[in-house]
Length: 433
Image (tube, rainbow, N blue to C red; front, side, top):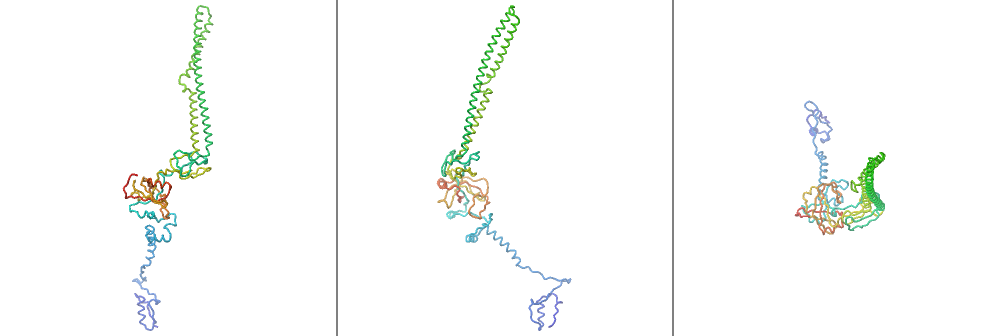
C-alpha cells in the first residue's frame, strides 16, 4: 500500500483527503468519517487555528422550555381558561388547594343557576351575611359580677323581650342583698343622729337664752344694790367695805351678762341647719344615702337585663356555670332584618345608596329583596370566606349594609348570620332606602 503523506496538506478537510486517497485503487474504501487523521491548519503566524464553533438551536430550546412552562402556569392560574377549569372539574382538584395561602384567585363568586341566568354585566356580586338591624347584641354579665355563677335563666330561645327585662339571675344576690340591708341600717342610724343633734342644738340655744336672761336680771339687781350702797356710804351709814362689795357684785353680774350674750350668739347668729354640729350630722346622712345607693346598684349585678328590645337568638350558658367570656346569650331586633355585604374595593365605585339588592342561598326557599342602606367608609380584610379553597383570604373589601323589605325580613328572621350571595343591580335607578 502506498504511503500517503498528509501532514503537509494545508487548508483541506477530511473529504478532500478522502478524494485524494481514492486516486489509489489499491487502498480499501473508507468514508470520510473513518479517517483516523487529525487535520490542523495553521494561521499566518504558524499557530494552530481551531475550527469555528457553530451555535446549536437545541441549547436555546433548553432555556426557553422552563420560561414557557412558568409563563403558562401563571396565565393558567390567573385567567383559568375553560379547558383548565374543565380539568379541575373532572379531577376534583382546585388551584392552590394544597396551601393555606393560595395564589390562584377566582375572578367571581360561583353563582347559583337561578341568579346566573339573570346576571347583568353591570351587576356587582359579593358574599353577605344576614343579621338583625343593629347587628347581634351579646348579653354579658353585669360589670363587677366577679366570680358569680348563673343561678337561673329566665328566658328561652326565640322569646321576645323589652329593654330592661330580667334575663337571668346570678348567685351573688344574697350577699348583695345583705350589703343593701346594712346600708339601710347605717342610714337610719345617721338620720337618727341628725335628729338628736338638731334637738340638742335647739336645747342649747334655749338654755343660752335663759342663762342670758338670768344674767341680765342678776346684773340689774346688782346695779340696784350698788346704788343703795353708794347712798348709804355718802350719808355715813354704810362702811367702805359694804360699798366695795356692792361694786364687785355689780361688775360680776355685768360680766355674766356678757358671757351669756356670747353663748347665745353662738346659736342665734346662723340658721339652725347651719350649726356646725348639725352640718356634720347632715353630711353623715348624705354619706349614708350614697352607701345605700351604691348597695342598690351592686344588687343590680345579680340580675342580667336585656340591653335592647328584640328576640333571644341563642343561650350560651346554663345554671351553675360561670358567665362565659363570649356572653351569656345573644339577642337582636329580628323585626327588621338587614344584610352585610362585602364588596371588593375595585367594584365599590359602582355601588350607591338605594340600589336594589337580591340575596340568594340554597337554604332559602325564595330570593330576598332589599336596597342598599349604607356604604362603609373603611377598607378592611375579607371576613366572609366561600367554600372555594382558592378564595383570596386577604382581599380588601368595603362593607355595604342592605335593608330588607318587610316580606323578606319575615323570612330572614329565622336565619341570623346565614351566608348568602348578594347581587347589587347598579344599573337600576336608586330610591330612598
